[in-house]
Length: 190
Image (cartoon, rainbow, N blue to C red; front, side, top):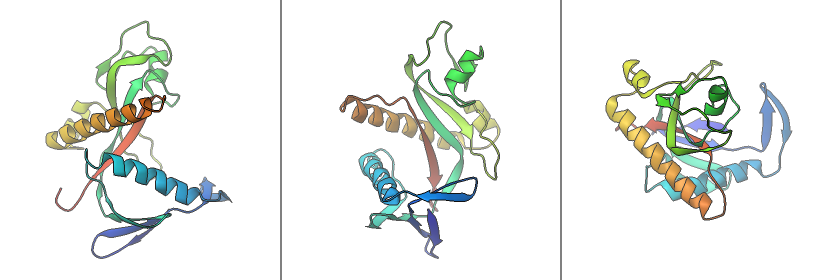
């Protein structure tokens, strides 16, 4: 997606049909930009009552006019199942024998893809410039000054509420929401 900045803090986000990897354009997928923009719109429209978002308008199916935000340096993954395949997933760590992760302790004897007793938050650092995300606990976030206690409380409460909404909407359609990642930002008013 392209990003055009405006002096008033607005951003124009244009989603393209191109697909790329390793900084090389590989192909164009017809209507990909429109589909991605409209999927995002679907969720932003259905969660704005939980948490305000950056969206100001959608002047075209591929375009979002948004308010500039300062991205918080923590990515928040909410997980409802012992699942995943990345190095930061709870299943990968669990299979390696870890039971304490992200500030949570999971019991022995769990099965792959088993539902957790309740959804858990598994935050990671937000990697920039090619670095890798690193697992964090709530105390890490506060002790490293990544977020204030008030910010962490707001972010974690919102993440769990967003996940609950997603689980509810998925269940109404006969689906499950296993996990999802949220990124948060602040406007000029915090």
